Image (cartoon, rainbow, N blue to C red; front, side, top):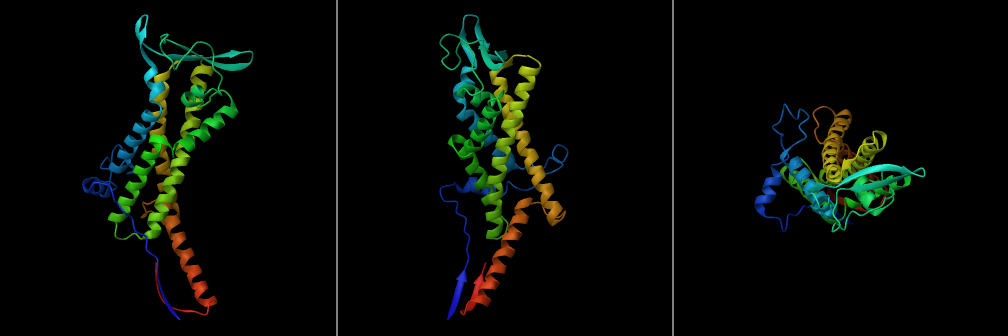
Amino acid sequence: MRFAIWFVVEGTSDGIPAEVWNLLKKGGGDSGLAELDPNNIATRNWLLGQLAGVSAYVGDNWKWLRASLDSKTHTGFRFVKAKIHRVNGKIRYYFSGYSKSNLVFGPGGFGPGHDRIMSIFGGAGKANSAFKATAAGVVGTFKGNALISFIFGSASAMAEWQDDVSKDGYDLAASLLTTIVKSIFSAAVTVVIVTCLVLLIMLVFGASMSVVAVGALTIGVGVAVSYGTDYLDKKLGKMVMGESHNDGLAAVLAEHMRQSVHYHWSYLKKKLLWNYEEAVF
């Protein structure tokens, strides 16, 4: 018996305007910012990805971000501020600078486990709450506006892959998998860093902090963590594959997948009684 088995991985850009798709295809080259970006990470697609991420964060947290700038107070426009106090040995958050009509911030103290504190401050002040906030940040990567941002990043990876004739389906699969891992890692690290900074500023130094400043801090830390993650990814990839490789750990994973499939294919040819005519991977 003769069988011809073909393994084909095809990316599709259905529904994406041709101009946008072509823009993404050419957006993964040199960043052109040699002095500011010696690691060549801030490519056009990377910058567009960060813009998408910022837009997603603002969209998903718009309610409290908008409420943190209150123009209806008795003294006019004010920034809503938060301060941490210890009450009976427990950490409580108190807000000031909001009007009576502000339904997001209210009187009284809020514990680290309160939904409002979890979403704004990452549950800072209690290990259990901080852990839950970190988990929520990871899950949030694949929900709401953040999901759209993640899809944009995946589309960019697919467009860059499609434009590089030297790459095959293994490279695409590896690129998409590493994109998922890096997104999860970046989301978790961002929440942890912001939580630690909030505790340092508000608990250790006893300073009050504008709520909108926490949002800005989260965005800034998120971009920095994303850059650091991509830098680490590239460095580890070069350590394994050599200095000439710029695709990070995706190249390592793609090569492992390629060798694994070929190994098992050869094993099957020896074990089974069939006669295979051709197999294209």
